[in-house]
Image 1: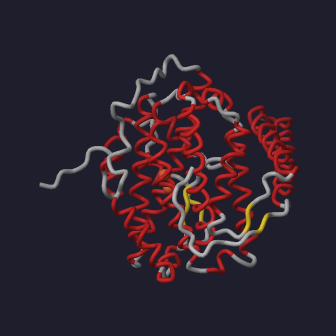
Image 2: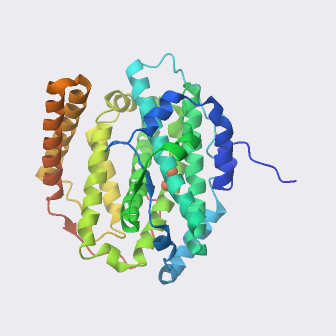
Image 3: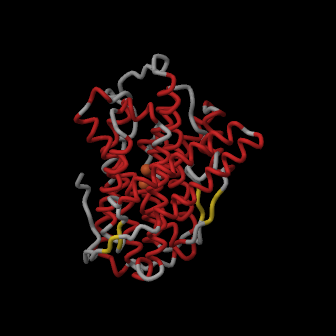
Length: 374
Ligand SMILES: [Fe+2]
Ligand SMILES: [Fe+2]
């Protein structure tokens, strides 16, 4: 008898995972879905690309590493992991400090949207492709992201909110990115995702009194999934050396700067959340950037100079400009519009200042393959 999974954690394919979520969507909340629908510079987006170009990739030049990675993903060490069990402590949502609750729910919705964004893109690639190496990889990655998004939605449901993922798939705007931009952006978001999750996990391992929600206990296996996804994109990029040389190095620098700066600004909007975790967001950002830079040396020929005097100074300027934009928009009227415009101009200048810091070059290893080491 073919037993159907009833929880996204047990789903073996992305289709099964999504069907389970479709079933639960009846209970999902309008407000959370609205937040997930937002498209600003700082909110997670949905992407589409030239799937035919992606499908044409030939992985034979990285075959040995490729097969090892795929075998590991097929063995599926995290099947059944992403669901509540006896380690899931009771969460006192009503007793939670209101500011923390607001920021934490915002964090969960944004994480859920980001996980689901990966799921939708990977699933579409699997559906459109005919290259068995590529479709197999994307099927496996979509499977993982569906579980991750489903698990965050479980946590949100306890707070009385959850994102309607089926609705998002159909209604959220899709941003087109050329395949090479998808590689840079997705590779980085997988690796920075790993670095973010493992840094919080290790911090809470050492300081369990700050673990104000049980979901953080799941972060170790979680980040290992993201690590593998990042490995896959490193191998995809390695099949074509042009992707990481010449003019493309400027694009790599652009994506590194944009991804790091976005993380910094977004995290600095969540003061109560980081206070509850016992984490200084400046320390956290530096830690995550350092780890991500070390990892990205496997494929990128440059890293950003995050110890340059202009780096931290302009991140702070960017954050302040962003606060001014938000305040201006909230205030409305001519005064508000002017304030927001001034903020946008200062944000653009700060970004240019970050982007023009000379980057650090280095030799790349022969094999890209890495194991999670943090
Ligand atoms: Fe994920
Ligand atoms: Fe991922």
